[in-house]
Image (cartoon, rainbow, N blue to C red):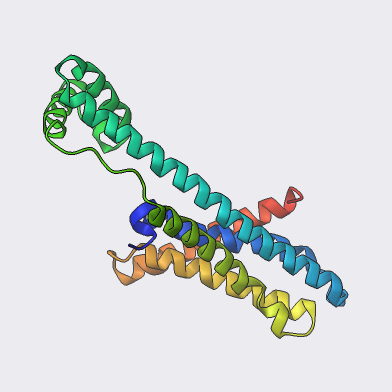
Length: 218
């Protein structure tokens, strides 16, 4: 199964954006030093790439923890729904999961009746299995590859082009195009103008975040 089946399409794209922003934040310290030594450039580039790798691994661990927690919560709801003496607990748990979704727009009484019906349906289903090692590995490997891969694309020009200034320009362009691509592909159910608009929006947001991070000394 693709990573988006575990963490969602939005957060899958976000992992790429994080990698781009992290790498651009590191490499932007080279701005204004076109003649800086290759040794220092290499250290900055390596730090950017290793930070992207670390981010991907850390995020993978958080997603695994979150998915395990959600499975436990779902099983608690199912088990409570089966027990006649725990109906109130089941409804409370369902509310915790769903009150902060689009269902918040439904009047409270109607929402409560919906939860009662939902609890009745859940009483007849099997508990979810725990997350398998394969699922955990998919999440960890997926976030690692997305974050590290995005960072690698941003730092690649420094390995191919002589001169930090020119390499930085190409690197930034690569990062911006990658951010554009993420925004564009997130809107696969929209028309072409909307895709382009979302692409530019992702690029702009990523640039703003990178600029703020740099300004704060990150």
